[in-house]
Amino acid sequence: MKPWQIEFGNVGQRVPWWSLLLFVLALLVAVSGMWRYSAVRMQFAQTAVPTPRNEPVRLPLVAESGVTTRPVVFETEIKPLRLAIAQLNVPWSALFQRLEAQARGDVALLSLESDNGGPRLRLIGEASSASAMVAYANRLAAPSVFGTGVSIVRHESIGSSATPVVRFELVLPWTSPR
Image (cartoon, rainbow, N blue to C red; front, side):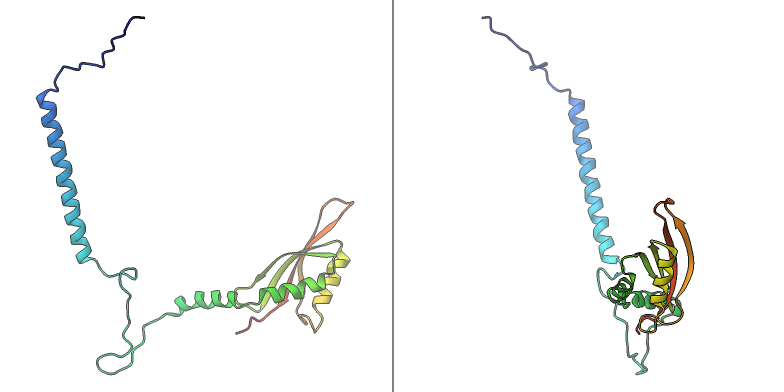
């Protein structure tokens, strides 16, 4: 077998002097750029305005004159917070239990929404027939369940003629606990 000689490029050839000079110049530019970036970042950190992430903002409750001051809060800022708290305070599981106890197998509940803190709930469901829908609305209108004010807002027949299904929407009186 004959030995092979493989050349990997120009092994004995030197790199031109101008390419070494170009490499050193690029290295100096990169180091000076990193140094400048570091200096600008330190200057920014020293002059940065404190934010809630950096330092907590403390509002003075008593001014130097001794007069008690409160931060100014507008009603437009408070209203969405009150609505969110009202949504969280609704006892959803108890409501679902009351509604499902009256369903008795012929009605399926699809959704239940509150009226943004208003005095009503909107229920969407499906019943096996129109008479089952009306009977469900009457059971909910009983004084021990929701009382008067339960009304069918809309209904529609969906499905084939062999298995008709009635989709309906009810409005129920509800006042969320305060």
